[in-house]
Length: 386
Image (cartoon, rainbow, N blue to C red; front, side):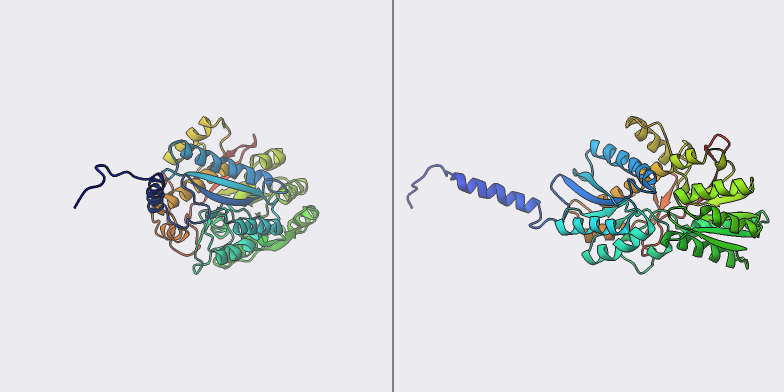
């Protein structure tokens, strides 16, 4: 057989096909929504304005610090994590608009840090239908912690866990006459039910319960009603302005009343707004003390915050930092070619993950990954102490 060509010549168009084929082998024909060759995008609807805007901003600060530090080191399997945050001003209707927009554009791989009880109650069925995982939502509501739920990964201890800790503390020191103030929304009613259940387990009932509207217009009236029942202590299932107005009104009527609030109270702006009225108020926390540098996770957080130019450490920004770290670990375990199903499986399989003094375990539906709860106290300088 005669040889017509001594050297094989590759036409330009064939070279292009070879390169394209190599890329197709390295990258799936149809990538998951929100996943690109160099990035993974998470979507977040949270409150950056409105009655709880300062709370949402503080949690977001910690999350951004973690993601930025991680991306500077190469991200997860060579992909940076991008967080698209939309403000919903704590309005569940706006939350749904934001989440539906994420779904309609196929722009995000998973939801992260969605904020608020009524907001998450509204969005989770929509996300579930769309196959969109929900990572570390900010709410302690039992209503979104069903053991039958898949794809929802609550990290923080529930409001039931927080109320249990408060009631256990009060009854241990001999206080049994307990009144409950609760916000007249989904969050407040969840907190009320949790507190009532914790009392019932000890064969107790609240001496009185009183609701407070979101705008705090009846906070003083609620305080007056509760104090008329002569409680030894008050449990507060309220957040934002209603908490501030209720505590101030109670101190005006009966200075020194023992009041116990949930972790949502502990924003820097709330502490400033309370001023001297905050002295002696006890608050549950669902992450370690952010000044306690003996814990590795707290030292890591402090170093990252300082590197980002933040010197104000708080439980809220530490919680956001931890949320982001856990979400990133789930993405890492989902593999180099991540799918939503792989992410859900990886999060479900996460057991006894030690972040450095705080352990996280999932795999129980939407139950909390952490049960950590401890008490703090507001001192005379308006600072939290253990």
